[in-house]
Image (cartoon, rainbow, N blue to C red):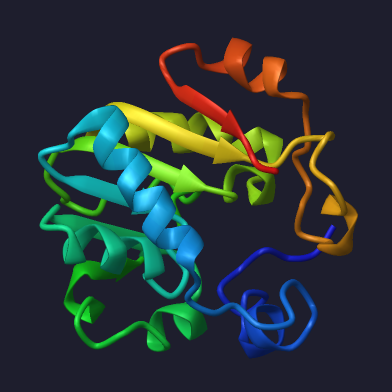
Length: 174
């Protein structure tokens, strides 16, 4: 298993093929933002695993106060300047407190499969401390080509995730 620190999620990970070939803004973030607004009508949003802040930007462009957290210094350094003040570098598996407010909705898209199984409880506690509602999109064993990324270390069927924490609105990545 790779050492999943900020250094692992570097330029090569996001833009060089170690994880993604190119991690760029696409229409999927607009679609995801519209879905979040339609399903939850959130007062504000915190995204765990925000990377370059694309979803945070799409939500803010729609008037939703959105913020993001990511482990990767590299990804955060590539965020659009319109959202850079709303993004935080933090490892949610560390158990360290950030002093963040409570958010109406915490979202996480394609991040949980990167979290070591023994750290999932720490992430759950972080989310419970900082959020009222939760929407998580997760890669599963049914996700095509998930094996291309060595940091996909916690892969389960969607039912496993739903049983693990039934207060979350879970969705499977396609």
